[in-house]
Image (tube, rainbow, N blue to C red):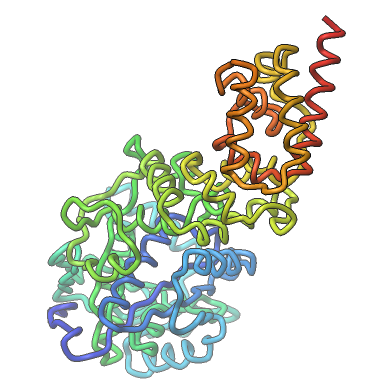
Length: 484
């Protein structure tokens, strides 16, 4: 018998249901996020449902911290799920029910082979350069079971025929049942293994389309055989190729395979990260920038490339800068406030955050960079940038700074236009170029030689802080001259 998966276009006659099913054994990383994004987009495109399932039956490695990291990452990215999160550990009774069903129908059996026997078997197979696999010792054994031994449960895999997977990404893939051994579906402590629990979950949750990494491709024929034994209709499978580092190696921490929340901490926008990931292996013409609505409209899992993609940190940073420049200031302000809080700044205790964003949007590649360069708007700095102070806070600048301080103290209408005119007038009265006034003024107000336009800088720093900082700069210049 040959079992075929994905032959019929299920989307024509049923509601599309996809799922993201991470294991809580670590952080939510880039590869997992892309899989979640593709699954989410496919469901949204077809008016279907997206299910979040936590595959936590690996008791030794699963942690509550990892579960929280997954949920936090999904929330930050805006990948809202329609159902879940479901925990496999809460479904153990259901798995036991299915395992018993497979035992009762003869599709599973108890295996009493010791660990030592299996290790010896594997060593002999490796020595003969054979593929390591279980030899079916207990498959049809009539021997009395050994005492005081807790067996594992193995699935009785068909020994003839094959499995055809019509994968939406990879095309048709054929597996021979003779290459598949009798996999363990329940451990000796009774807990189910991955291949059993995932089949039951997909079946019970009505999952129509499974989108996952191609490292699971070899599991697919095993899962399809279990589904057949249960008399169930299989979902359509799509196995997405892995992401490689720029050196061609498997993506690791040095390439950027870190927790998705680290990108949050480093000042990346969720819009930028999602836009970057959707283009890793998928394209729509030459278009590079996609809104979420455009992703939903144009994305099709069948258009995903079947070769591996390369992670490019520089391209992600470029996209991040693009979104910082082009998203509405209120959106950037919403995201920036968290980063200012990390610097112990309360954005409500200073100029309007949206106005700060407008002043800084063209000047930052990340929100961390924007936050750090905006601190001076909210609190006085402790020291000047040495090179900037040495170049600009000199005795020759004292008269201009003193005149500006005096004028600002009497200025009633604190507007960028009026402030710009003040600087122009002082430069004209001293017969010097505006830059000779603006740069010392900028260092006095910001502590460094780079800031937004001087009029906007004055406006956002505010009257009291401007005068206070100008007084401090004049004292600094005087002390520097006396020490010379």
